[in-house]
Image (cartoon, rainbow, N blue to C red; front, side):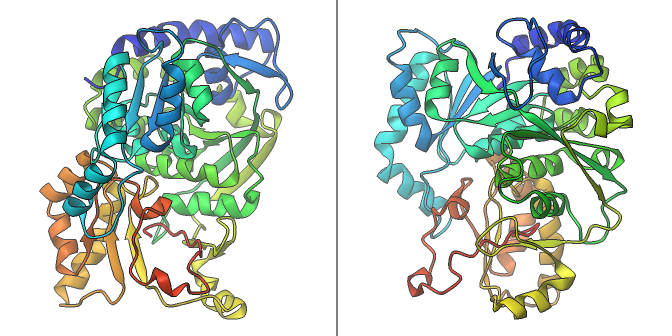
Length: 449
């Protein structure tokens, strides 16, 4: 059992009382974000904290670290004089694997080149009771979503896309190694009380639109600085219609708008995902306090009164978007891309297609792509562009292999990389990169690429 069931039971047993105390103290209904924040204070609040002004001490439930940032964090922690970490913590080896030839060869090379780092992280993890995920096990954020995230919890991680866990109803925040060290040592974690941005989703996605198009649209509205110092809370009928991994994709890219984190209230899609990933006990516990794992009804009925900023998006009308180049907040609807690209002299030839990264590497993401790959294969076609697949975790890779997805991709010439970050973070020995083309640094983000 990867998750700490006793910790979750304790969190849930105290959650209702802490929320009721906060509601009485503040004197109004609470957003879901506020419930999590006030339920994770190091000490009970004696007053309502002012958003965007007051610095507050929190007690996160867990810590996650990736291999590049874990090194300094653990070296610091080793000086704390503790025999064991104070909260459940994990290390994930996903950043130091170069994507070049294919999963097996690339993983073998990483285990040789970074052996000293991996051995150090494994040794320290073993000594201090830290969970260790070896190279090839998966990308930190997908592994956390599959194994550790739980509705109503709070976690920090030494990576900006820790926010991915908001897809399972957490307040999950990316931090530096020193912050992680403090929490692992049992010290309070300080954060300025975030402002709140509400995103009301109405309607339902249709056609080619996917969850990622929601955050691409939001990025176009808020820009790369619009979420700074804020937590984004998604709600509405459109939010409920999304899958749990789709919610994770949206929260993941909240980092691109500078948001402290993003989250969704608990719903049936999260319950299904917990059960599908072997955490039925957590789903049962969460179902028992479901009314407290979302905002109070009055908040969503009149959101302008409770959020510092409100955005409304009608999913019935949302079309696929492409964001970039150079900046992730340059959002262009796909229907306008041809004319906008021509007007700005952007490249229109697709040279590489990448399915993966922590943003788009769930079973759902890959199943969407394989439906197209099947049509290509049935027509006897091959890809003209380079085509690569990066599964988010070993669980995802095993499942898509079991269901024949990898065979379908390979029939049209795809390369399957290791279950790691790879191209998304620049760990990619890309053929042709030496040409230094004008748009080599272009940032095009679309739902499958």
